[in-house]
Length: 358
Image 1 (cartoon, rainbow, N blue to C red):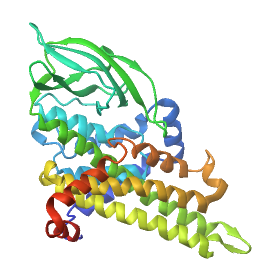
Image 2: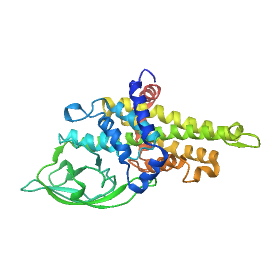
Image 3: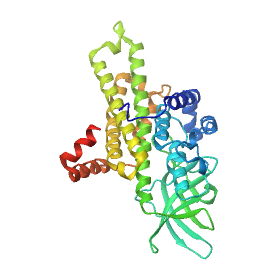
Image 4: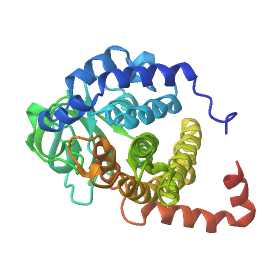
């Protein structure tokens, strides 16, 4: 694994220092009321971390998808309340793919749900786009909203970039208090759109799944560390509760969940850096593991913390609520397990072993 994962340790160290200095408890807590944190976004953006993985020729900071994924892992560990995944790995990536200008500020993306009704029609002046989209992250706070919009009559797929002020936005949040808004679009564009290959939709779905997996890997690590620290300090019957065997089981299981999620997420990011579509199995496997780990690790952590873990004044909920929210994004029940199963059947035992052992 150490030979496979080749991110510069300096990148991880710098990102850790940056998020640790900005994402303190009070700032993360306040972001739920404000809808986001300018105090976190500004230094992260100034340092170029919001453009990692995007080519310098397009206005990005350069680096690989694996680099971007590692920064997301660190951001997840600090519950960073900003649209980082959307700006560098999803919406920003769509702009680059479509050869559209990359905005200076936050970019978000329509994740695509079964209830979305966005459609496009070519017009004499450009492109008409109308319909609705749901669960759009930080739509009101972004400079641009990127969306994949089909023209079913012409069998074309467009990347469309629209401004928040040109759409109607209905506020809503996910379980963690992060904005996930409904947008209504009815515009005629004379620019800010481009035709892309149909495979871009599949790539966006896979990149979205990878982004949430990396965020969850970071959050699981942080949750395990927080729980370990709490049980070492909290005493009962004259000794730290972390010395009791029942509590130690919770600590071990939580650490195992964090470790396996991190490992599989990093492997998936390395394979995806070469070819996202070819990394479908690795992404699906990592996503499925992250989803399962989020369910079990939060249970271990909250059981070890007892009542303290349920209070607003303690940081555990910043992580556990995000894990439960992120596990439902770019993921439907059974979706990634089905991908893993279908791939295993298609390649057989001889083809599956090298994937599992690599």
